[in-house]
Amino acid sequence: MSAKTMKSKGRETAKLEMRPEYDFSGGVRGKYYRRYMASTNVVVLEPDVHKRFKNAAAVNEALRTLIRAAGEGRGLTKRTARTRAKAARAGGR
Image (cartoon, rainbow, N blue to C red; front, side, top):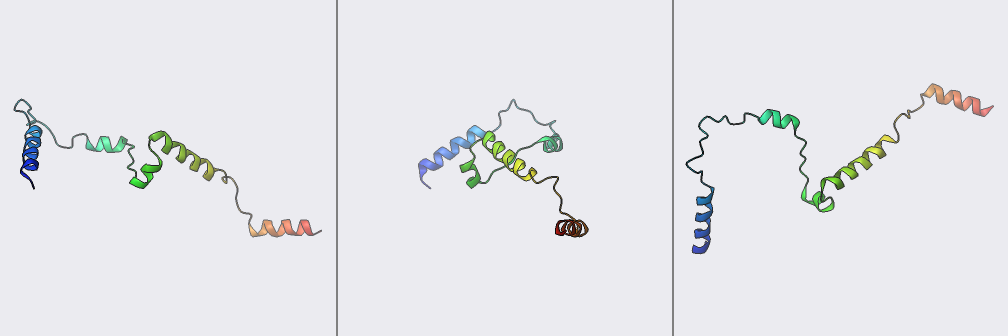
């Protein structure tokens, strides 16, 4: 590590220290954590996915397309063996 790098790191550390006027002695760690986690809808994308979808609108559009495509087959059920046999007999006459 060069002397220049060490100097800049020292300055950054000094900037990050708490000021004396800040008082968190009465603070409670994680007080709102559960409430936040229950209401958050943040999803972290992998880097390769982020390259393709740069913003929330693009992701939402793609997901809605998938939802519509998956929903097209809804309501259609397979025929039971009895119904298939009955349809085959009726069609053979």
